[in-house]
Length: 364
Image 1 (cartoon, one colour):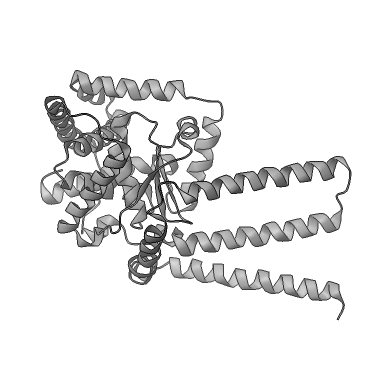
Image 2: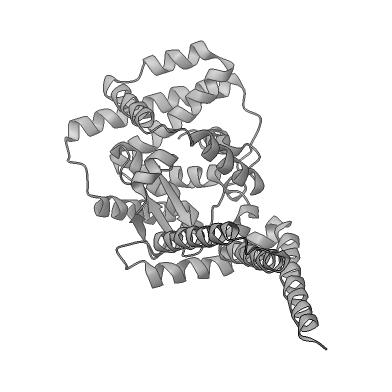
């Protein structure tokens, strides 16, 4: 057997083996019960805890460094490709070898991503875990929940004004977020979060222009928060990213778990951040069906709350860039590819969970 045939057989073996692994992941992921019982609460729970123990003590994000190395590698490869193209050193063999390597890398990244975290996109929803009855929300439901959120936002903001407490450091804020999860565990043991580990993003400035306030790294299990955004956004964002660490992959799910944790504590700062974000989500949904009512609710916000919203809008305006539509389109397609058909508006879907929660428990 010549060398060429050996190489071809070895390559086919690799492609075949990785294809079988991907098929297994796809089949396994079709059953939410399998995912919940065998993966999310067992395999993933071990992965997640292990990574937080291994990397949580470091003051910087290994995941961010990993991303940076990938970017540098990609730029280097692009430079080499450009040099070969300019010198006309590209041929069929080069394209064949490069195509094979890219295929293998892509398949391996997909497998690792799913084993380490991605399968969670197919787990049972938090609504199912709480036995909430999700129904198609109508205008009356939206008005009811918006009225309740308006009250909560104004009350919590007034309490913060009365307290006159200085805003905590990032380190202290992250500790308080972990404390929120210690509290919510008493009501919902499956939300146990130990050990805790949240880090500031190394790419905060870039995040301001790319539009992210936080993100979870599925390859290192780290939760990163962009601490350069307006401070009142950070508490709920931190609770949201911790929910991702617990395996709630969908944005709607992470939003609702973050809400449960933040509002289970007595921390007014987390209450305000959470209720403000939820108020904005609900107001946006109400606007599409009754713009007059949505505007009326917005006018009833305390002046201090309105000032925060204006600050947030000004921040977004200041960091707007020509690439924003492309970034939103790409991220929206990523969400759709991972069981979130509404794309970027998936975050807003937390309001459906909140309405169902209110109907069952009579509180938010």
